[in-house]
Image 1 (tube, rainbow, N blue to C red):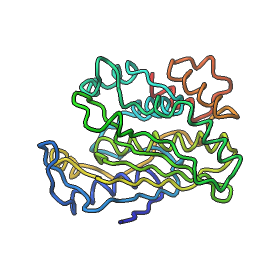
Image 2: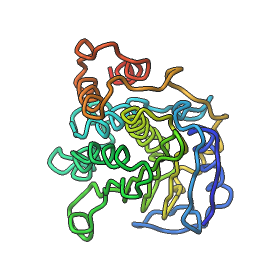
Image 3: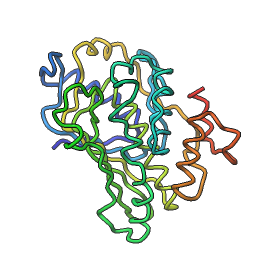
Length: 272
């Protein structure tokens, strides 16, 4: 399995789309031509809390997607209207206005158990949140939103919290930058609750791919850059309080978030 190491999210995304453009194996999925890494691939990001993905030119990112998806995941909830209002292109993936594969409800109640497991035993290998559920997701006709993520795992190494995401499939152009953003926000929330520093972020994907329709866009991309606040930290001293603050920010209730951090202010701002 190839391991690709990067300093931050932006450099990871920029390199992955370029590699797929230059070296990807041509495949067809659901009738659409793609370029895919031949083997399952793991990205290793040393500083997942350094900022979110952006580029100098050639692609306009909607940072509201990172914010809404990250706040929903940390908040353990889903409010489809918030995402649909920002990005109408998500509408075809909703069933009767609901995202059946939304991650927030699938981890609901699990964040406290992850924190408790790692606080009770920092060496625990059981701090896992399952997302994809074969009983719910496999072979169900008519379901438009099947989770691309299989599971999330957290482990303590020294005074740092590492995070590992396992995905069955990842669209490098559209999905990867926002996935790196939302999962780093969750890693940061759990680290804050445990009073740990943020460690490495690992992102393993069975099928990392680039659709042929997006290949010409890679030629127009400029260098990558980071966006976001200078300091990445959540307010709140427990995972329950951090989740509550995330839900308040989703609702636009900044006035009910005591002493918001730079990160929380940025997440609120880009959702407005």
